[in-house]
Image (cartoon, rainbow, N blue to C red; front, side, top):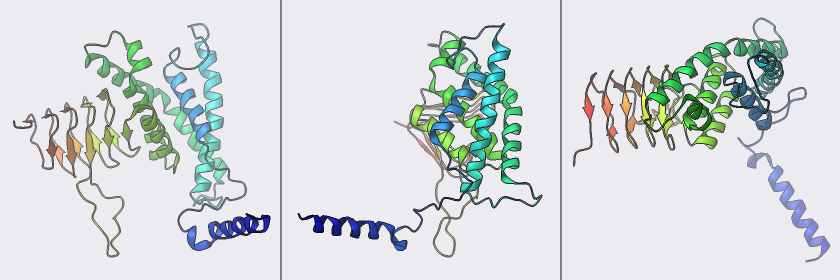
Length: 296
């Protein structure tokens, strides 16, 4: 192939890849002053958050009772700075024009949001402590809380989810989903940040669990591997496109147990104290304190 032929092929390919019609829905135009959200920085944010919530289990520094306030203080300061930058990036990605109804610049909104998220960390820790307790009490093989925190994927997934959920509640675009997808890649547990999950939640083993965006899960709920809490169908608008934002995933009330590979679909209610057996489909409400098993 001659140099002229090579140049022609490369130029034609560049033209095709740059054509407007080929970029529809695939091109994000960078806006000056708004950096793109960074996966690497989000990884550091999650690492910092885990080291603050579970000091001594995550992070590189040794921590003891004399140094814990210092280490948490340093971590909080860096977390706030990184989080404010990423919230601003996410706002820019979503089209923030620099002001909102109160004429607050995006940078100030981002800093305020980061501050509010950090103020919620004590409550996030308190809830995660109940999750650790539930995982320990629910697994005879567990030898200590430390083993649960260090090794069990449910705690890593729920840590990401509980932080992401608060960012979702605060109206931050994109970042919450990125955080839960990071946990999905790390643990095999897929929790949408918009889902609502009560305290003392545990997911045994965890691999393959899916929890949809409009799920509502009560307190003291236990799921096993492979459980899907999904949508039964997707209502369409007049143009044939899925209607967004409507409740379409299950509600699990308090004290529910769902065993491995069970699939619960649609906006149905699994009543308090129900037990859903392994390898079955549930598409209708279950009354409180009932059991459903696969028939042989």
